[in-house]
Amino acid sequence: MAPPDQQQPSAGMQSQQRAQQRQYASKTSRSQAATPASEAADMRLEFQQQQQYQQQQPSSRTISAPTSPAKTRDSILQRVQSLTDAAKEKANSISNDIKYAAATRRQQRVNKDRLLTLLVVDDENFDWSRYFRGKRFFGDFEIHVEQADIKDLTVTASADKGCTVSMVVLSPSGSRVIRSFRPDFFLCRQSVRDAGKDYRNVLLGLNIGGVPSINSLNSLYNFQDKPWVYGQLVQLQKKLGKENFPLIEQTFYPTSGEMSVATQLPVVLKVGHAHGGVGKIKIENNSDFQDMASIVSVASTYCTTEPFVDSKYDLHLTKIGVHYRALMRKSVSGNWKSCVGSAMLEETEVLERYKFWLDSVAELFGGLDILALEVVVSKDGIEHIIGVNDSALSLLGNQQEEDRKHIFDLIVERLETQVLANMATQPLGVTTQEEEPPAIPARRDSLVSESSVTSSHQSSQPPKANLSRQGSVVAAPAQTQQNKGTLDDTEDTMKNLRKTFAGIFGEM
Image 1 (cartoon, one colour):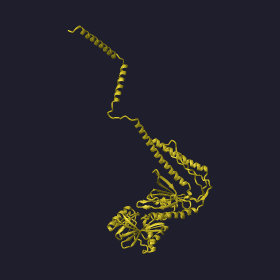
Image 2 (cartoon, helix red, strand yellow; image 1 turned 60 degrees about the vertical axis):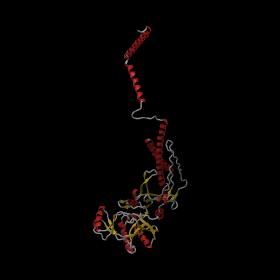
Image 3 (cartoon, helix red, strand yellow; image 1 turned 90 degrees about the vertical axis):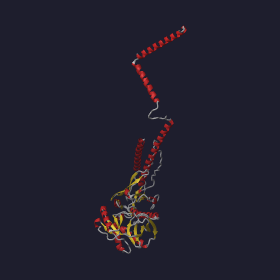
């Protein structure tokens, strides 16, 4: 039995526990008697605590690292810089196009009576403007060269207004632009007709416009069918004699129906009008000849045959103005077509009979300023003239630059004797120098600040008489009309700039 002093604390503790139980029961009864508003507040508090807990937990799908404010600022600056560079590049392209178009219009307006336009049909491998750029001819005339491939030309013409040539060119920014002009002279350095290509409509338009050329338009048009040219060579041979003009024999077939049997074998069959060995085949027996007749029937064109010559070498004889040249061409690849494959070129002496042949052919079609004769020399030394080419001849050998300079001298001579002589017979016109349009001011709110200063010159001297290309008297325009035209050009240019910049910043 426990002593009495130890039982008292136990009783005290029991009373304390009973008091706590009564207090807990009172709290429970009060919580059960809580209002619905307090329950809703507790639920919101619990929901907010759950959301905070979920936000603190890492996502299972994406793991995002903390973003540095410095990196965010750098990325924004890089984006702005890229947009600025793009805007600058596009603005520079637009500015170059505007300057290019303005320079073209200015060149067409200012001193147009002292500007001659030369149209050159040639490929892009050689630039003919290098001979005329920055030079003055016939005192104070400038010759402007417009060069293009013949497939890129369109010619419209009328008897009263002459002809207008439209051509596709590339602007400094690389965009394709159509430019129109009126040529004063024409140089043809490409074949107008070749195999399946035919651009004789260009010659037709230039002929209606009365544009002089090298060679003449009449001769160029006559060279567009080889049998027609061969017929003229036959007449020349009859006049000079076979011993003085050794032209190869040729047979003409208008259609495949007349190709029954070859007169002699082997022969070279040429289908239609082509250059560079195209449409040419060697036939050694009648069976192959009949097979080729069926192919000609599909082509729906004429053909010619000539005896095959087992050649030792070919001769390429040229005449440019008064300059003669003879080149010997030997095939290295073994092809019976010396113009196909590899060949060795060697310049040889221009014999007197070669000059005689060239001078005689140069009298055809009213005169040929530029021509070339193709001659085949057999292994026994017999020479055969097989063809003639016009101004579209190929320049061969190491003297090509010298031959081009001869063509340049010939152009300048013909411009003086044909174009300027025709202008001198027309009435003198009074012309004044037009005022150049002012430079476009740089906009302050644009990303590109480009300043270009163009000084406008106004003629203070009295107008003087000049040669007029149209032959009409041009009165001096009033100053108000000049200013009005200048303002119109400036307003149009500014409108285009505003539209373009609006598109640029709209894309951003």
